Structure formats: structure tokens, C-alpha cells
Amino acid sequence: MRAAFQRAHRTIIGIYLRIACRIWWRLPVLLRSFSMFVAIGTHLHSLVLRYGERRQNHSTFFLRNRPELELIKRLASDAAHGATLRVAVFACSKGAEVYSIASTLRCARPDLTINTRGIDISREILDFASSGIYSVRAADNQALSGAVSTEELQLNWYTQKDQRGASIVCRMSESERDMMFDREGDYLRVKSCMRGGISWHCADAADRELVSRLGHHDMVIANRFLCHMRPAAAERILHSIAQMVKPGGYLFVSGIDLDVRERVAIGSNWKPVTELMHEIHEGDPSLRNGWPFDYWAKEPFQPQRKNAAFRYAGAFQVQ
Image 1 (cartoon, one colour):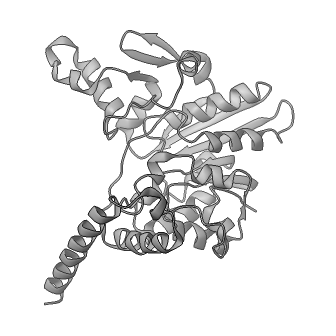
Image 2 (cartoon, rainbow, N blue to C red; image 1 turned 90 degrees about the vertical axis):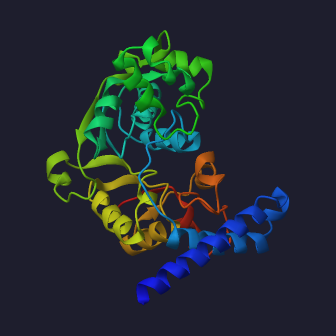
């Protein structure tokens, strides 16, 4: 009886959200920005977070959040000349974020030894990321299977996986592509000079033995994957990941339920990095444009909220 009631309740919530979605996207953009409608959106998003189905997603982009990369660069400016900077990137997926961070740091601080670890639970996607080769062939061309080899089809499939038709390099200018890649027909290969100092590790972010295996890091990047987990699991894993940050180091955690991040940050006494906070919060269109009906999307920046720094900061200093 209880199970039947829960199914009926979910069905009613689903109908309610579908109707609300049709109405919401017909409202003028300016009207949706008013505080009353932001409050309505917050209510709708809370239902999406509670009842929506979540699953892991491999979509990503090179130079995905430029203000975030700028903050990483600024924080690295404090490192002593000739020092070694250790960076861990969790859920590195196709490798775009790893290469973006590594190249940003290498260009900003060529005097440093930069060791970057790409960490993901999927061996298949990790092998693809470590190859550093991406297809720019249109997705529709995959149907021409007789015109390309099995290896090329596999490269196309992994490059376009979960991208919804958006190119993995669509946020880069031509000059930035030329700086990052060597062009080989319909494929882009990350330049060898951009791949130096990068290692790849197949591991589970929930593994509490990672610290003993990989050590502590100056920066740990845990972006855009915890949102695909239920709050209890995301909170547990966030606590585990934070153990990888050396005292005084920095933890970047965007793409997570904001209530979870705020609660963990306050409870752990992390220090929010408020520099570029607003810019980083708004810096990834794929995490903003779908609010309030995509569970991974983020609410509009509201500086007047209580504990706003803990809620909206994308980076924290771990004591």
C-alpha cells in the first residue's frame, strides 16, 4: 500500500513539474529574474532534486569555466619559484578539464614543476582521456561506418558521448585550439608539451585509502560529478575527497547540490575563496541555463542569502 502511494505521489509530482516547466519557459527572462519568481524556481528545483532520476554524465568542455581557471592561476601565483605544485582532478572524464588546468598552470608558471593527476572510476574513459585525441567529425558522420576505421569510430563515440551535439572544443577560439592541439584531419591531438607532468589513475572517489596511495595535494578539483549522486552519498564522498588536500591547500567543488556543499563547508570549517566567486558561479552556462528543471543546474547568484559565501564559493581553503 505504501509503495503504491509513493508511486502515485511521484506521478503527481512529475505531472506538476511538466506543467510548471511549460509555463516557466514561456515567461520573459526578465520576469524570471525577479525575487518572487526566483523563490518559485527554488521550490521547483527542490522537487527536481528530491524526485529526479540522477545518473553519471561524461559531457565536458575544454576551458569550460574561464573564471575558475583564472582563480586556479591566481592561487598558483603564491607558490615559490621552482616549487612543485600537485593537483588532483577527480572524475576527470574525457580529460578536457585536466588538460585545461595543466596548460593554464604551465603557461602562467613555467618555473614550477606541475604534477597533475587525472582520476576517474571508469578505466575505459580514462584510457580515452590519456590518449589526448579528440574527434571534430560531425556526430551524423558516425553513421558512415564504412568510411572510417573501428578505431576512428571509437574516438568519435567517446568524444561525443553525452555531449548533446555540442563540440568538446566549442568554448575555445581558433588560436586557443592551435595552442593546445596538433590538427590531424578530423582529429585534434593534445600537444606533447601540454601533456607533460600528467598521470592518470583509475580509482573511486569514495576510497578512503586514496590519501595513502596518492598523497596530499596543493589543489584538489572535484567538479561537476557529485551532483549526479544523492545528497547523502555526495556528502560522504566530499568529506573523503577533502582528505586529499594538504593543510592550507585548496578544494574546488562546483557542480554539486548547493545545500550539500554549504553544509559540509560550514561543518568542516573551510574558508570560502570569495575572489571571482560570482564569476565562477555564473561561468559555466551548462550549469546555469537549465535551472530550475535540471537537477545539475545551479540557482541564480543571491548575495543576500545567509551564508552566501559558503553557498556560492566554488573553491575553499582547507585548514
